[in-house]
Length: 489
Image (cartoon, rainbow, N blue to C red; front, side):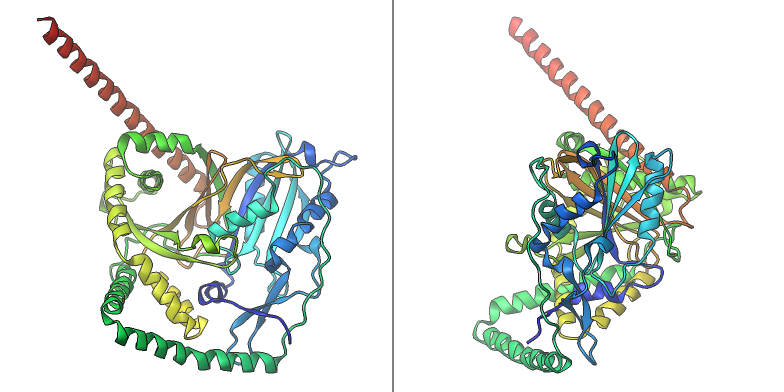
């Protein structure tokens, strides 16, 4: 019998919505100290890096698998790649002079503009030497059908080490398992379809025996589906971000300290993610103003992916996410008012059933074919349910190393979707919060203005928090003085 694994509906949908303009790969830009990675000739020792990655591939077997399809239905499956070649996936390049971050960002945009080869395992790593400051960059690129943000963070912890160990390790022997025959796939799929009604019958029987909790669950599920679909019936404002996306990418980044965001939320309220969304709201207000739009008149929403991955599922690849639609108060000029509005909104969203509705729709797709979910996603994009994606993934809060070289940064790369020319990704690592902003090349030549707007928007929140603290100190001192005066009299 041949070995294979069936993709889930959500994973398969990322294959289905990919086209010549919207490439569905996620990635990251990791920057390391270069010295521990150099060979005797002074250049980066790519063979040693490949050996280090090879020594850990047995921990992520999906990286040696490629796509195949079940006959007739064309449902995608994973099979072992019997022609796997590590050197194809781990590539070596160098930055032209002057080797600064601007040059690196251009390289990232070019790498992310190219689709992955579906005849091979769907990942690449580019080692780019020549970065100024005695640094080297690793650009990772993995198809979204393989990982989501949380599993991507887990994967980083597998491929990198918590200790500065210079030994690349010894790769374990690997032998690809035989592929299934068409006859095996057809029979297995018939059994899969045959068992689905039996699963439904068991669920119905359980509901009849104990109807009350099942009725409540059905009610919650229907309410969740309605909340997920509701934004499609109330389109957001058309902005320069809602344009036809081309195949070429422009990438930029910035970084902050997690402690600085926590300091803001500790003074002004909300959560760390509320501070992020308030920062994005302020940045959009400034950016739209520079484009000549009246932000006071705009209805802006962000799509915020939310992980539904349980602790038992940590370390597994594939997607376990749903999405929330969050209004962004760009019409408010005051940064504190924006944060308070975001805090109230996200509180309501968290208490809603949007996340449940997303899970139910994905589960329904498992009973049909991936194309159903694909067409739903495309239809939603054309009705403008949101203006951009903002995703914030927590990463390891300890230093990670590649062959003794400490990782300094991890800027996430999130794919663009139809009619969405800009997406914002955040990743926290070792006390830092790293922003990666992916955009359409032609439509956002002023992307760095948006990065500057993010930095300005957050400084406004910091200044407001500092002013609030000063007022608090003055009030406390005044009360103490009044109390002392009263006691003395």
